Length: 191
Image 1: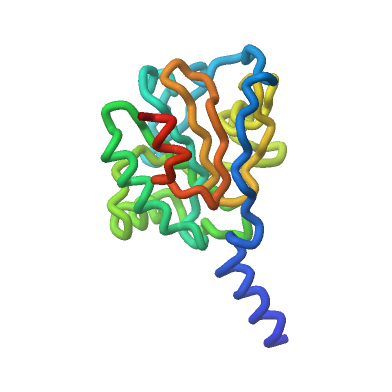
Image 2: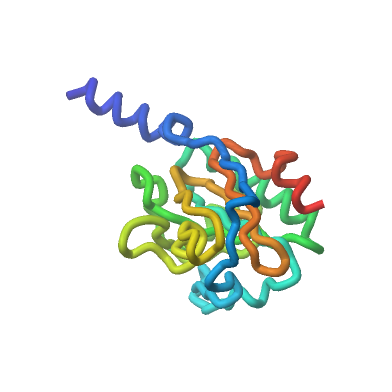
């Protein structure tokens, strides 16, 4: 039994790196016109206020599914740094999720306190949501349905997957968990 608990602890602590996918490239030759706009969507922020994505028009938008107990949780620091460094042209939107091995067990209030106290997060955080399955949030429905977004069907494979949206609301790229927020793969696209 101890061996089982030890194995489970190992998976919980390091599972993020075991299941993360490499980022997939956007093949513009396969891109089609999206059937809906990212700016038609809305989500409830971590304080309970409904926010329309259209309020972020004119900026790049980096949507990230986050978790407080993941091997990639330290990416909060780089996400905040990226946000502060490029705040005139970029907004980061954090969507906490408990979809992968129960790595976000906290309430919205606990998540907000954790992000603020541990990483100084100031970018918008949204209420805990679902990124997969039948109850997946409309943001993630749009991000992962190529008929809606024009080309991408890649779902988050783990926490801290990133989706970059252009200032005019088009999905530009998907990045897996292993791509760090300050990676040139991301920063070069927003320069």
